[in-house]
Image (cartoon, rainbow, N blue to C red; front, side, top):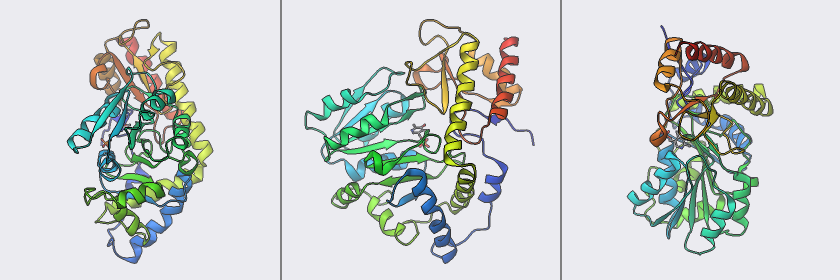
Length: 362
Ligand SMILES: *Cc1c(COP(=O)(O)O)cnc(C)c1O
């Protein structure tokens, strides 16, 4: 079967071994077999996320838990830290959930900085904030450790962090960070099929959720905790995803987390070198570039080379690789290439060769 290999920033390429695990025979979600499976992945996930808290598995894409976090934890007003398409959308979602919300908007490509958040929280209006660690639409990372340090100054504020396109590719130590929610969908850096979200919640957030009356049912954090204690999920999960996750986590630990992080840094550097070497510039502010994808400037900002991005995408696709033509309001004036998941220097080398060939033909 001919297949175009995915180098878009999610969903990313899923390996054959992951699909084999995904297709294991079905088991009942209240039976011992499933409980054993969850009991097996639980310590692996805790180790990956640097937490002693339970790590929950939700059958939905990331937005399910992103919305759920607001419903569980925002009672007064949420501060939405906004720097790109995904983080901007959280303000709209808060509104649709009937929550009072205020934007902290920075230009796309800029990071969110601790001082900006500090100034907003100092007003005393907020009981929660949303932050995206790695804004996938612009390929920009915000300094999570420095932002999380603000939690000590504002212990009552719930820090809700989306690490959808960074979790497992860069180190994230939940307990040390001291934040309240950390979540990721599996179709990005985990290189699993879309449809599962992995998240963890602080004791303070669980306590707060238990006192929030309109938190709903499907993403009720208290329900997740209750069932996690028995190695189960509140409702029937995508059991196939959990099989695939188990197989993937074994691969993570066989490689070693440090080696995995180093591999992502290396493969990301290859894309940067390719872009800069061909006269392009990167869209994010210098020093805040993502390590899991590159958002390459193609006219969105002054300077640098501009090409027919749609043409580049088409020719590269003909060579068997799908890259992304930009997202939201920077579609066409940027393009994006992902190094998330199982990519190696060899596999990225093949992509670079295809890109070179395509560029030469434009
Ligand atoms: C992909 C992505 C999302 C959206 O996830 P869905 O799986 O489509 O719900 C949210 N945040 C970030 C940072 C993403 O990259």
